[in-house]
Image 1 (tube, rainbow, N blue to C red):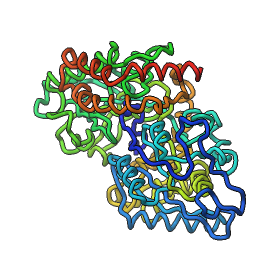
Image 2 (cartoon, helix red, strand yellow):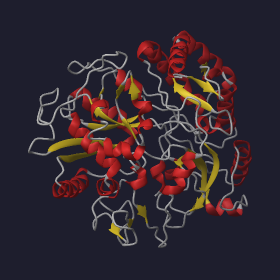
Image 3 (cartoon, one colour):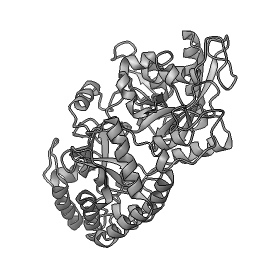
Length: 530
Protein backbone atom coordinates (compact mmCIF):
# COMPACT_ATOMS: atom_id res chain seq x y z
CA UNK A 1 0.00 0.00 0.00
CA UNK A 2 2.99 2.29 0.30
CA UNK A 3 3.73 2.50 -3.42
CA UNK A 4 1.43 5.49 -3.62
CA UNK A 5 4.29 7.75 -2.60
CA UNK A 6 6.30 6.94 -5.71
CA UNK A 7 9.17 9.40 -5.92
CA UNK A 8 8.80 12.57 -7.89
CA UNK A 9 12.12 14.29 -7.33
CA UNK A 10 14.42 12.38 -9.70
CA UNK A 11 16.05 14.22 -12.62
CA UNK A 12 13.23 15.03 -15.06
CA UNK A 13 14.65 14.86 -18.56
CA UNK A 14 11.49 14.63 -20.67
CA UNK A 15 10.97 17.23 -23.40
CA UNK A 16 7.41 17.69 -24.62
CA UNK A 17 6.73 17.40 -28.33
CA UNK A 18 6.15 20.72 -30.05
CA UNK A 19 2.52 21.23 -30.94
CA UNK A 20 0.76 23.77 -33.09
CA UNK A 21 -1.09 26.33 -30.99
CA UNK A 22 -4.83 25.84 -30.73
CA UNK A 23 -7.02 28.81 -31.60
CA UNK A 24 -5.51 32.15 -30.55
CA UNK A 25 -3.61 30.83 -27.54
CA UNK A 26 -0.01 32.05 -27.49
CA UNK A 27 2.99 30.55 -25.75
CA UNK A 28 3.75 31.15 -22.09
CA UNK A 29 6.65 33.29 -23.18
CA UNK A 30 4.19 35.91 -24.44
CA UNK A 31 2.61 38.35 -22.00
CA UNK A 32 -0.58 38.17 -24.05
CA UNK A 33 -1.30 34.50 -23.31
CA UNK A 34 -4.92 33.85 -24.16
CA UNK A 35 -7.81 33.67 -21.73
CA UNK A 36 -10.62 31.17 -21.87
CA UNK A 37 -13.04 32.77 -19.44
CA UNK A 38 -16.73 32.28 -20.15
CA UNK A 39 -19.86 33.75 -18.66
CA UNK A 40 -22.74 31.68 -17.28
CA UNK A 41 -24.96 30.44 -20.02
CA UNK A 42 -22.48 31.39 -22.74
CA UNK A 43 -20.09 29.33 -24.80
CA UNK A 44 -16.35 28.99 -24.30
CA UNK A 45 -13.69 29.87 -26.87
CA UNK A 46 -14.23 26.57 -28.66
CA UNK A 47 -17.95 27.17 -28.93
CA UNK A 48 -19.16 24.48 -26.53
CA UNK A 49 -21.76 25.09 -23.86
CA UNK A 50 -20.63 25.68 -20.29
CA UNK A 51 -21.71 23.81 -17.17
CA UNK A 52 -24.46 26.35 -16.65
CA UNK A 53 -26.31 24.51 -19.44
CA UNK A 54 -29.02 22.04 -18.66
CA UNK A 55 -27.18 18.89 -19.70
CA UNK A 56 -24.11 17.77 -17.70
CA UNK A 57 -20.73 18.01 -19.39
CA UNK A 58 -18.54 14.90 -19.66
CA UNK A 59 -14.85 15.47 -18.95
CA UNK A 60 -12.20 13.00 -20.16
CA UNK A 61 -9.69 12.28 -17.36
CA UNK A 62 -6.50 10.48 -18.39
CA UNK A 63 -4.62 9.46 -15.25
CA UNK A 64 -1.39 7.49 -14.75
CA UNK A 65 -1.45 4.12 -12.99
CA UNK A 66 1.59 2.69 -11.27
CA UNK A 67 2.36 -1.05 -10.96
CA UNK A 68 -1.20 -2.15 -11.81
CA UNK A 69 -3.13 -0.82 -14.83
CA UNK A 70 -6.84 -1.73 -14.54
CA UNK A 71 -8.68 -3.07 -17.57
CA UNK A 72 -11.07 -0.87 -19.53
CA UNK A 73 -14.06 -2.88 -18.29
CA UNK A 74 -12.99 -2.45 -14.68
CA UNK A 75 -12.54 1.29 -15.22
CA UNK A 76 -16.03 1.57 -16.72
CA UNK A 77 -17.47 0.12 -13.52
CA UNK A 78 -15.74 2.82 -11.46
CA UNK A 79 -16.85 5.49 -13.89
CA UNK A 80 -20.50 4.39 -13.58
CA UNK A 81 -20.41 4.51 -9.78
CA UNK A 82 -18.87 7.98 -9.75
CA UNK A 83 -21.27 9.38 -12.34
CA UNK A 84 -24.29 8.02 -10.50
CA UNK A 85 -23.01 9.73 -7.38
CA UNK A 86 -22.45 13.01 -9.27
CA UNK A 87 -25.96 12.80 -10.74
CA UNK A 88 -27.46 12.38 -7.27
CA UNK A 89 -25.46 15.39 -6.08
CA UNK A 90 -26.77 17.49 -8.94
CA UNK A 91 -23.28 18.07 -10.33
CA UNK A 92 -22.93 19.64 -13.76
CA UNK A 93 -20.09 17.32 -14.79
CA UNK A 94 -19.55 13.63 -15.45
CA UNK A 95 -16.23 11.78 -15.74
CA UNK A 96 -14.93 9.68 -18.61
CA UNK A 97 -12.01 7.85 -16.98
CA UNK A 98 -8.97 6.50 -18.78
CA UNK A 99 -6.27 4.60 -16.87
CA UNK A 100 -2.86 4.91 -18.57
CA UNK A 101 0.33 2.98 -17.80
CA UNK A 102 2.60 5.41 -15.93
CA UNK A 103 5.70 3.94 -17.56
CA UNK A 104 4.57 5.26 -20.96
CA UNK A 105 2.27 8.01 -19.77
CA UNK A 106 3.91 11.08 -21.32
CA UNK A 107 4.32 9.38 -24.69
CA UNK A 108 0.74 8.11 -24.62
CA UNK A 109 -0.69 11.57 -23.87
CA UNK A 110 1.52 13.15 -26.54
CA UNK A 111 0.26 10.71 -29.16
CA UNK A 112 -3.36 11.25 -28.15
CA UNK A 113 -3.03 15.01 -28.39
CA UNK A 114 -1.25 14.88 -31.73
CA UNK A 115 -3.76 12.36 -33.07
CA UNK A 116 -6.74 14.47 -32.05
CA UNK A 117 -8.05 12.01 -29.45
CA UNK A 118 -10.05 13.56 -26.66
CA UNK A 119 -7.91 14.56 -23.68
CA UNK A 120 -9.41 17.09 -21.26
CA UNK A 121 -7.59 16.62 -17.96
CA UNK A 122 -4.18 15.00 -17.70
CA UNK A 123 -1.23 14.90 -15.31
CA UNK A 124 2.04 16.58 -16.17
CA UNK A 125 4.74 14.15 -15.08
CA UNK A 126 7.64 16.59 -15.39
CA UNK A 127 8.63 19.04 -18.12
CA UNK A 128 5.73 21.33 -17.23
CA UNK A 129 7.26 24.54 -18.58
CA UNK A 130 7.94 22.85 -21.90
CA UNK A 131 4.33 21.71 -22.11
CA UNK A 132 3.16 25.25 -21.50
CA UNK A 133 5.54 26.68 -24.09
CA UNK A 134 4.57 24.09 -26.70
CA UNK A 135 0.91 25.06 -26.22
CA UNK A 136 -0.15 21.66 -24.92
CA UNK A 137 -2.08 23.16 -21.99
CA UNK A 138 -4.67 25.90 -21.60
CA UNK A 139 -4.62 28.57 -18.88
CA UNK A 140 -7.02 28.07 -15.96
CA UNK A 141 -6.51 31.53 -14.41
CA UNK A 142 -10.14 32.59 -14.75
CA UNK A 143 -11.42 29.54 -12.87
CA UNK A 144 -9.08 29.57 -9.88
CA UNK A 145 -11.52 31.68 -7.86
CA UNK A 146 -14.69 30.16 -9.32
CA UNK A 147 -14.73 26.45 -10.17
CA UNK A 148 -11.48 25.80 -8.26
CA UNK A 149 -12.10 28.09 -5.27
CA UNK A 150 -12.97 25.17 -2.92
CA UNK A 151 -9.62 23.60 -3.85
CA UNK A 152 -7.73 26.84 -3.18
CA UNK A 153 -9.46 27.11 0.19
CA UNK A 154 -7.75 23.82 1.07
CA UNK A 155 -4.35 24.16 -0.56
CA UNK A 156 -3.73 27.90 -0.31
CA UNK A 157 -3.04 30.07 -3.34
CA UNK A 158 0.75 29.94 -2.91
CA UNK A 159 0.71 26.40 -4.30
CA UNK A 160 0.12 27.94 -7.75
CA UNK A 161 3.51 29.64 -7.90
CA UNK A 162 5.13 26.77 -9.76
CA UNK A 163 2.43 26.72 -12.44
CA UNK A 164 2.24 30.47 -13.11
CA UNK A 165 3.86 32.00 -16.20
CA UNK A 166 3.57 35.67 -17.14
CA UNK A 167 0.54 36.14 -14.93
CA UNK A 168 -1.35 33.12 -16.27
CA UNK A 169 -1.94 29.91 -14.28
CA UNK A 170 -1.60 26.74 -16.32
CA UNK A 171 -2.04 23.91 -13.85
CA UNK A 172 -3.08 22.75 -10.39
CA UNK A 173 -0.29 21.04 -8.42
CA UNK A 174 -1.16 17.96 -6.44
CA UNK A 175 -1.63 18.62 -2.73
CA UNK A 176 0.59 16.11 -0.99
CA UNK A 177 3.70 15.52 1.03
CA UNK A 178 6.17 16.50 -1.66
CA UNK A 179 9.22 15.77 0.45
CA UNK A 180 10.30 12.16 0.10
CA UNK A 181 12.34 10.07 2.46
CA UNK A 182 14.51 7.64 0.54
CA UNK A 183 14.52 4.10 1.88
CA UNK A 184 16.72 1.12 1.39
CA UNK A 185 14.28 -1.78 1.14
CA UNK A 186 15.48 -5.32 1.86
CA UNK A 187 14.09 -8.59 3.28
CA UNK A 188 13.44 -8.36 7.01
CA UNK A 189 15.19 -11.66 7.68
CA UNK A 190 18.38 -10.39 6.03
CA UNK A 191 18.15 -6.97 7.69
CA UNK A 192 17.80 -8.52 11.12
CA UNK A 193 19.90 -11.68 10.88
CA UNK A 194 22.74 -10.64 8.55
CA UNK A 195 23.04 -6.93 9.35
CA UNK A 196 21.61 -6.68 12.87
CA UNK A 197 19.08 -3.97 11.96
CA UNK A 198 16.02 -2.99 13.98
CA UNK A 199 13.06 -0.90 12.82
CA UNK A 200 14.11 2.75 12.78
CA UNK A 201 17.72 2.03 11.85
CA UNK A 202 19.09 4.64 9.42
CA UNK A 203 22.05 4.45 7.06
CA UNK A 204 24.22 6.87 5.10
CA UNK A 205 25.34 6.23 1.54
CA UNK A 206 28.84 5.37 2.75
CA UNK A 207 27.45 2.90 5.28
CA UNK A 208 25.15 1.45 2.64
CA UNK A 209 28.13 0.63 0.42
CA UNK A 210 29.64 -1.41 3.23
CA UNK A 211 26.39 -3.29 3.82
CA UNK A 212 26.08 -4.06 0.11
CA UNK A 213 29.50 -5.64 0.24
CA UNK A 214 28.33 -7.91 3.08
CA UNK A 215 25.28 -8.99 1.05
CA UNK A 216 27.33 -9.51 -2.11
CA UNK A 217 29.84 -11.72 -0.32
CA UNK A 218 27.14 -13.79 1.40
CA UNK A 219 24.70 -14.02 -1.52
CA UNK A 220 26.90 -13.75 -4.66
CA UNK A 221 24.26 -15.19 -6.99
CA UNK A 222 21.73 -12.42 -6.23
CA UNK A 223 21.68 -8.73 -7.10
CA UNK A 224 22.65 -6.83 -3.97
CA UNK A 225 21.23 -3.51 -5.24
CA UNK A 226 18.62 -3.39 -8.01
CA UNK A 227 18.47 -0.32 -10.24
CA UNK A 228 15.32 1.79 -10.57
CA UNK A 229 14.14 1.76 -14.19
CA UNK A 230 13.62 5.23 -15.59
CA UNK A 231 10.10 6.29 -16.54
CA UNK A 232 8.93 8.76 -19.17
CA UNK A 233 12.39 9.51 -20.53
CA UNK A 234 14.31 9.45 -17.24
CA UNK A 235 17.48 7.34 -17.10
CA UNK A 236 17.92 4.21 -14.99
CA UNK A 237 19.43 5.16 -11.63
CA UNK A 238 19.79 4.30 -7.94
CA UNK A 239 18.07 7.47 -6.63
CA UNK A 240 21.53 8.79 -5.74
CA UNK A 241 20.94 12.14 -7.46
CA UNK A 242 17.92 12.84 -5.27
CA UNK A 243 19.55 11.52 -2.09
CA UNK A 244 22.84 13.39 -2.50
CA UNK A 245 20.96 16.45 -3.69
CA UNK A 246 19.11 16.51 -0.37
CA UNK A 247 19.74 18.69 2.70
CA UNK A 248 21.98 16.10 4.39
CA UNK A 249 24.40 16.16 1.46
CA UNK A 250 24.78 18.88 -1.21
CA UNK A 251 21.35 20.65 -1.13
CA UNK A 252 20.87 20.79 -4.91
CA UNK A 253 17.97 22.33 -6.79
CA UNK A 254 17.91 20.75 -10.25
CA UNK A 255 16.28 22.94 -12.91
CA UNK A 256 16.73 20.45 -15.73
CA UNK A 257 19.16 20.41 -18.68
CA UNK A 258 22.02 19.92 -16.23
CA UNK A 259 21.66 23.36 -14.64
CA UNK A 260 20.69 24.27 -11.09
CA UNK A 261 21.89 25.70 -7.82
CA UNK A 262 23.86 24.13 -4.99
CA UNK A 263 23.57 25.09 -1.33
CA UNK A 264 21.67 28.16 -0.12
CA UNK A 265 22.88 30.58 -2.80
CA UNK A 266 20.97 31.35 -5.97
CA UNK A 267 23.82 31.21 -8.48
CA UNK A 268 23.02 28.89 -11.40
CA UNK A 269 25.78 26.44 -12.33
CA UNK A 270 26.42 23.48 -14.60
CA UNK A 271 25.53 20.65 -12.21
CA UNK A 272 27.42 18.14 -14.33
CA UNK A 273 30.63 19.99 -13.47
CA UNK A 274 30.23 19.82 -9.67
CA UNK A 275 31.51 17.59 -6.87
CA UNK A 276 27.88 16.63 -6.27
CA UNK A 277 27.48 15.00 -9.68
CA UNK A 278 30.91 13.39 -9.50
CA UNK A 279 30.03 11.89 -6.12
CA UNK A 280 26.74 10.51 -7.48
CA UNK A 281 28.38 8.92 -10.51
CA UNK A 282 31.43 7.62 -8.63
CA UNK A 283 29.20 5.87 -6.09
CA UNK A 284 27.18 4.22 -8.85
CA UNK A 285 30.38 3.25 -10.66
CA UNK A 286 31.85 1.68 -7.52
CA UNK A 287 28.70 -0.38 -6.97
CA UNK A 288 28.76 -1.50 -10.58
CA UNK A 289 32.43 -2.41 -10.64
CA UNK A 290 32.12 -4.42 -7.42
CA UNK A 291 29.27 -6.48 -8.89
CA UNK A 292 26.53 -5.30 -6.56
CA UNK A 293 24.05 -4.32 -9.31
CA UNK A 294 22.10 -5.76 -12.26
CA UNK A 295 23.90 -6.80 -15.41
CA UNK A 296 23.13 -4.42 -18.30
CA UNK A 297 22.02 -2.03 -15.56
CA UNK A 298 21.49 0.98 -17.84
CA UNK A 299 18.74 -0.76 -19.84
CA UNK A 300 17.10 -3.04 -17.25
CA UNK A 301 13.33 -2.56 -17.25
CA UNK A 302 12.38 -4.70 -14.23
CA UNK A 303 11.54 -3.00 -10.93
CA UNK A 304 13.44 -3.89 -7.77
CA UNK A 305 10.35 -5.17 -5.99
CA UNK A 306 9.60 -7.56 -8.85
CA UNK A 307 13.18 -8.85 -8.79
CA UNK A 308 12.97 -9.31 -5.02
CA UNK A 309 9.72 -11.19 -5.36
CA UNK A 310 11.34 -13.46 -7.95
CA UNK A 311 14.30 -14.12 -5.66
CA UNK A 312 16.77 -12.40 -7.98
CA UNK A 313 17.51 -9.22 -6.00
CA UNK A 314 18.11 -8.45 -2.35
CA UNK A 315 17.36 -4.73 -2.19
CA UNK A 316 16.57 -1.46 -3.94
CA UNK A 317 16.09 2.23 -3.08
CA UNK A 318 12.89 4.21 -3.49
CA UNK A 319 11.37 7.43 -2.16
CA UNK A 320 8.02 7.87 -0.40
CA UNK A 321 6.40 11.04 0.88
CA UNK A 322 6.84 11.59 4.61
CA UNK A 323 8.93 9.42 6.90
CA UNK A 324 7.74 6.03 8.10
CA UNK A 325 10.44 3.44 8.87
CA UNK A 326 8.64 0.13 9.16
CA UNK A 327 8.54 -3.61 8.63
CA UNK A 328 5.81 -5.14 6.50
CA UNK A 329 4.41 -8.57 7.29
CA UNK A 330 4.34 -11.74 5.21
CA UNK A 331 1.17 -10.58 3.46
CA UNK A 332 3.22 -7.96 1.55
CA UNK A 333 2.16 -8.97 -1.96
CA UNK A 334 4.35 -6.30 -3.58
CA UNK A 335 7.52 -8.05 -2.44
CA UNK A 336 6.21 -11.52 -1.67
CA UNK A 337 7.83 -11.37 1.77
CA UNK A 338 8.28 -9.20 4.85
CA UNK A 339 10.60 -6.27 4.11
CA UNK A 340 12.21 -3.50 6.17
CA UNK A 341 12.17 0.15 5.12
CA UNK A 342 15.51 1.62 6.23
CA UNK A 343 15.67 5.45 5.88
CA UNK A 344 18.70 6.89 4.10
CA UNK A 345 17.94 10.62 3.81
CA UNK A 346 15.14 13.09 3.08
CA UNK A 347 14.97 15.00 -0.17
CA UNK A 348 14.97 18.76 -0.50
CA UNK A 349 11.56 20.42 -0.41
CA UNK A 350 10.69 21.37 -3.97
CA UNK A 351 7.37 21.41 -5.83
CA UNK A 352 6.81 17.88 -7.07
CA UNK A 353 6.29 18.78 -10.72
CA UNK A 354 3.05 16.79 -10.61
CA UNK A 355 0.46 19.18 -12.01
CA UNK A 356 -3.03 18.61 -13.34
CA UNK A 357 -3.48 20.37 -16.68
CA UNK A 358 -6.29 21.14 -19.07
CA UNK A 359 -5.27 19.90 -22.50
CA UNK A 360 -5.19 22.38 -25.39
CA UNK A 361 -7.89 20.36 -27.16
CA UNK A 362 -10.39 20.65 -24.30
CA UNK A 363 -13.62 22.26 -25.45
CA UNK A 364 -14.92 23.30 -22.02
CA UNK A 365 -12.25 24.54 -19.64
CA UNK A 366 -14.76 25.51 -16.96
CA UNK A 367 -16.19 21.97 -16.84
CA UNK A 368 -12.68 20.53 -16.73
CA UNK A 369 -11.87 22.73 -13.73
CA UNK A 370 -15.10 21.70 -12.00
CA UNK A 371 -14.10 18.06 -12.50
CA UNK A 372 -10.58 18.79 -11.28
CA UNK A 373 -11.97 20.42 -8.15
CA UNK A 374 -13.50 17.06 -7.20
CA UNK A 375 -10.03 15.48 -6.90
CA UNK A 376 -9.18 17.89 -4.10
CA UNK A 377 -12.51 18.24 -2.31
CA UNK A 378 -14.64 15.12 -2.77
CA UNK A 379 -13.46 12.01 -0.87
CA UNK A 380 -15.87 9.68 -2.67
CA UNK A 381 -14.76 10.68 -6.17
CA UNK A 382 -11.09 10.70 -5.22
CA UNK A 383 -11.12 7.34 -3.47
CA UNK A 384 -13.33 5.63 -6.03
CA UNK A 385 -10.61 6.37 -8.58
CA UNK A 386 -8.04 4.91 -6.18
CA UNK A 387 -9.92 1.93 -4.73
CA UNK A 388 -12.65 1.14 -7.26
CA UNK A 389 -16.19 -0.10 -6.62
CA UNK A 390 -17.33 -0.94 -3.11
CA UNK A 391 -18.18 -4.62 -2.73
CA UNK A 392 -16.28 -5.53 -5.87
CA UNK A 393 -12.84 -3.99 -5.32
CA UNK A 394 -12.91 -2.89 -1.68
CA UNK A 395 -15.01 -3.08 1.49
CA UNK A 396 -15.81 -0.41 4.07
CA UNK A 397 -14.71 -1.63 7.51
CA UNK A 398 -17.02 0.79 9.32
CA UNK A 399 -14.06 1.97 11.41
CA UNK A 400 -13.86 5.37 9.79
CA UNK A 401 -15.66 8.62 10.46
CA UNK A 402 -18.37 9.47 7.96
CA UNK A 403 -16.86 10.16 4.55
CA UNK A 404 -13.38 9.52 5.95
CA UNK A 405 -13.42 5.74 5.61
CA UNK A 406 -11.09 2.92 6.55
CA UNK A 407 -11.29 0.28 3.85
CA UNK A 408 -9.88 -3.14 3.06
CA UNK A 409 -9.66 -5.57 0.18
CA UNK A 410 -12.45 -8.14 -0.08
CA UNK A 411 -11.91 -11.29 1.95
CA UNK A 412 -9.35 -13.58 0.38
CA UNK A 413 -8.38 -11.04 -2.29
CA UNK A 414 -5.14 -9.23 -3.01
CA UNK A 415 -4.62 -6.08 -5.05
CA UNK A 416 -3.80 -8.31 -8.02
CA UNK A 417 -7.04 -10.32 -7.72
CA UNK A 418 -9.66 -7.57 -7.69
CA UNK A 419 -10.84 -6.13 -11.04
CA UNK A 420 -9.73 -2.60 -10.17
CA UNK A 421 -6.89 -1.29 -8.01
CA UNK A 422 -5.17 2.06 -8.48
CA UNK A 423 -4.11 3.01 -4.96
CA UNK A 424 -0.49 3.32 -6.07
CA UNK A 425 -1.71 6.47 -7.87
CA UNK A 426 -2.55 8.24 -4.60
CA UNK A 427 -0.22 11.17 -4.15
CA UNK A 428 -0.77 11.81 -7.86
CA UNK A 429 -4.54 12.19 -8.16
CA UNK A 430 -5.13 15.43 -6.22
CA UNK A 431 -5.41 15.85 -2.46
CA UNK A 432 -3.72 12.89 -0.76
CA UNK A 433 -4.94 14.07 2.66
CA UNK A 434 -8.47 12.92 1.84
CA UNK A 435 -7.28 9.43 0.82
CA UNK A 436 -9.02 6.73 2.79
CA UNK A 437 -6.83 4.68 5.12
CA UNK A 438 -6.29 1.01 4.24
CA UNK A 439 -6.76 -1.77 6.79
CA UNK A 440 -3.80 -4.14 6.76
CA UNK A 441 -4.28 -7.93 6.53
CA UNK A 442 -3.41 -8.30 10.22
CA UNK A 443 -6.36 -6.06 11.14
CA UNK A 444 -4.32 -2.95 11.96
CA UNK A 445 -4.12 0.39 10.22
CA UNK A 446 -2.00 3.51 10.48
CA UNK A 447 -3.22 6.97 9.62
CA UNK A 448 -0.12 9.06 8.86
CA UNK A 449 -1.78 11.93 7.06
CA UNK A 450 -1.29 14.51 9.81
CA UNK A 451 2.23 13.24 10.53
CA UNK A 452 3.09 13.66 6.85
CA UNK A 453 1.75 17.22 6.87
CA UNK A 454 3.98 17.98 9.84
CA UNK A 455 6.96 16.37 8.10
CA UNK A 456 6.31 18.58 5.08
CA UNK A 457 6.09 21.73 7.21
CA UNK A 458 9.45 20.97 8.86
CA UNK A 459 11.32 20.05 5.68
CA UNK A 460 14.31 22.00 4.37
CA UNK A 461 13.20 23.95 1.31
CA UNK A 462 15.13 25.03 -1.73
CA UNK A 463 16.14 28.71 -1.62
CA UNK A 464 14.12 29.09 -4.82
CA UNK A 465 11.09 27.05 -3.72
CA UNK A 466 8.18 27.84 -6.02
CA UNK A 467 10.32 28.95 -8.96
CA UNK A 468 9.79 27.19 -12.29
CA UNK A 469 12.30 27.57 -15.09
CA UNK A 470 10.61 28.66 -18.33
CA UNK A 471 12.73 27.31 -21.19
CA UNK A 472 10.86 29.10 -24.01
CA UNK A 473 13.79 31.36 -24.87
CA UNK A 474 16.33 28.52 -24.96
CA UNK A 475 14.26 25.67 -26.36
CA UNK A 476 16.78 24.86 -29.09
CA UNK A 477 19.62 24.65 -26.59
CA UNK A 478 17.48 22.53 -24.26
CA UNK A 479 16.69 20.13 -27.11
CA UNK A 480 20.38 19.83 -27.95
CA UNK A 481 21.29 19.17 -24.30
CA UNK A 482 18.59 16.51 -24.10
CA UNK A 483 20.21 14.67 -27.00
CA UNK A 484 23.56 14.77 -25.24
CA UNK A 485 22.03 13.57 -21.96
CA UNK A 486 20.46 10.58 -23.68
CA UNK A 487 23.97 9.50 -24.71
CA UNK A 488 25.62 9.78 -21.29
CA UNK A 489 23.28 9.97 -18.30
CA UNK A 490 21.93 6.43 -18.11
CA UNK A 491 25.44 4.99 -18.28
CA UNK A 492 26.79 7.41 -15.68
CA UNK A 493 23.91 7.19 -13.22
CA UNK A 494 23.83 3.39 -13.39
CA UNK A 495 27.60 3.09 -13.03
CA UNK A 496 28.37 1.57 -16.43
CA UNK A 497 30.55 4.52 -17.49
CA UNK A 498 33.72 5.59 -15.70
CA UNK A 499 32.99 9.12 -14.41
CA UNK A 500 36.62 10.15 -14.63
CA UNK A 501 36.53 9.52 -18.36
CA UNK A 502 32.97 10.40 -19.32
CA UNK A 503 31.95 13.34 -17.11
CA UNK A 504 34.45 15.65 -18.89
CA UNK A 505 32.99 14.51 -22.21
CA UNK A 506 29.45 15.21 -20.95
CA UNK A 507 30.46 18.65 -19.65
CA UNK A 508 32.03 19.61 -22.96
CA UNK A 509 29.15 18.21 -25.00
CA UNK A 510 26.45 20.14 -23.10
CA UNK A 511 28.58 23.27 -23.37
CA UNK A 512 28.80 22.77 -27.12
CA UNK A 513 25.01 22.32 -27.18
CA UNK A 514 24.52 25.77 -25.65
CA UNK A 515 24.34 25.19 -21.92
CA UNK A 516 25.94 28.56 -21.14
CA UNK A 517 22.89 30.22 -22.69
CA UNK A 518 20.59 28.05 -20.59
CA UNK A 519 22.49 28.98 -17.43
CA UNK A 520 22.29 32.68 -18.28
CA UNK A 521 18.54 32.46 -18.97
CA UNK A 522 17.87 30.56 -15.74
CA UNK A 523 19.89 33.10 -13.78
CA UNK A 524 18.00 35.99 -15.36
CA UNK A 525 14.65 34.41 -14.45
CA UNK A 526 15.70 33.59 -10.87
CA UNK A 527 16.95 37.14 -10.31
CA UNK A 528 13.67 38.54 -11.62
CA UNK A 529 11.65 36.02 -9.56
CA UNK A 530 13.52 37.00 -6.39
